[in-house]
Image (cartoon, rainbow, N blue to C red; front, side):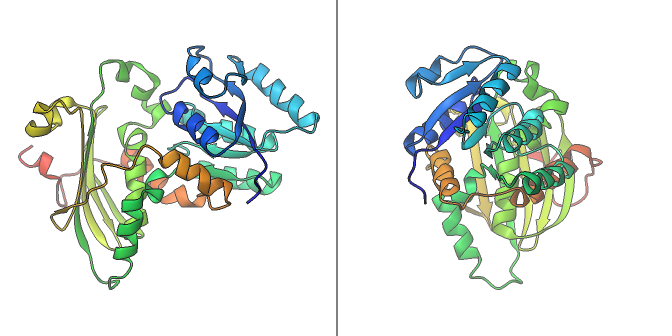
Length: 316
C-alpha cells in the first residue's frame, strides 16, 4: 500500500454519519482538504480538520475541486455522506473529477443505477468503494467462516429484528420521504440485507408482509437460510425489559433459535472499512447489487400474508 498521505473531499459534512468518515480519514493518516454541505452547522470539522475548505454551494465546491485537479493536486478520494437520492450524482461527480469515491449505504436506490456507474468507472478508470460495514465486523466475519464449513444443503432458520426509535423529526426530514431515502427498509435496513446475503448466499425469494413509513417486515429465502425480518422506528416496539432499562434501540438476530451476539464492535467499522479501501480491498459496485435489488423489491412489491411471519407480527 502506498503510504503517501491521501487527500479527501467530503460531501455531506453536516450529516449524522459524517463524523465517522472524518475520524476514519484522520485515523488512517490522511487529510480532509475540502467539504460541502448546504447546512453550515459543521463545527464538528474543527475537531478533526480545521484547515479544510468548506462550501455550502455545490458550484463553488466543484470549482475548487476542479482547480486542484488542474493544478496537478487532485483529491484522491471523495467521501459521500449526502442524502440517499443524491449518492448516484455525487459518485458520478467524484469519478469525473479524477477521484475514487467512498459512498455510504445505501449505494443507490435502484439496481439499474449500478449499471450506469459501472460505465463511468470504465470511462474514467476510477473506482467506487462502498461502506458495507457489517462485512468487516469481526463477529460477522467469524460467523461467515463458520457457515462456509457447512454442507451446502444446510438451511438455517433466521429471525432478524432491528428497532431504532426515532423522534417526530424523522418523518419531516428527507429520511421520511421515500423518493429521497428509499423508505425504512432502504435507509435503516440495507446493511442488514447485505449481511444476510454475505452470510447465506444468493437470494431466492423476497416476500413483503408489512410496509409503512415507520415499520417494515417480510420473509427472505437465501441459499442457506429462511429469514423472517422486522424493522421499526417505533419505541413502543422495543420489548419491555430493554425499554424499561432505557434502551431506544433493540437489535436481535437468531439462527436456529440461538442469539448471535454482535452488539459491540461497531464504533470503528468505518475506520476498518477505510483501511481495507486504502489497501485496495474495498467493496465495489457489484457487491451492492443483491442488497439494492432486495430493498427496491421491498419498496414496490405487493403485500402478502403468505410465508412464515416474524414473531412481532403474529396475531396481527
